[in-house]
Length: 146
Image 1 (cartoon, rainbow, N blue to C red):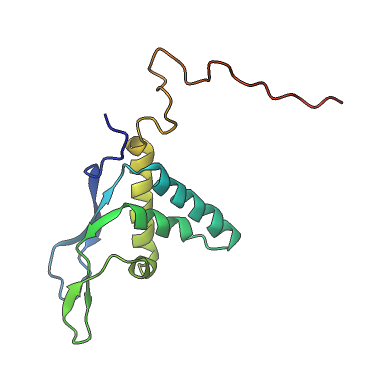
Image 2 (cartoon, rainbow, N blue to C red; image 1 turned 30 degrees about the horizontal axis):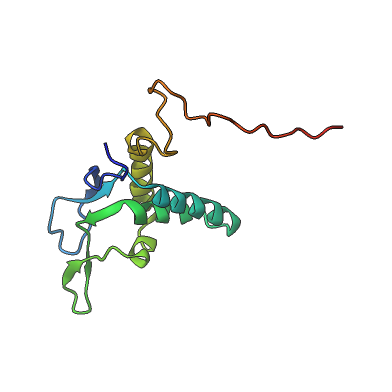
């Protein structure tokens, strides 16, 4: 048990047949982490809200990939036409085709939802523990009178 997200909680996502220059491997793939800390989850949530306001429906997808992507085997051509490793940057993530971006983001989101939440995001005892997480003396919020 730890208070931190486990950086080794990862999964390999198959992106399909290799589309790299020269087709140097059988399939393109990426490794994503599925256990994230509270701040990373908040950045994804903020991107979703800001994306809605700015009419950018892919903002949350890009942020999810940026927060979860550890490594990929994608290659691009350099100035001389030689294949080189594609960097993992915001710009590179923003240049992914829609199908790849969605596959990475939705797979990571599913993994996070299914098994990646921190054991106890609120800091309170879990539901399985014998004591509840409520304060010993909860404050009553007065209701407005009419």
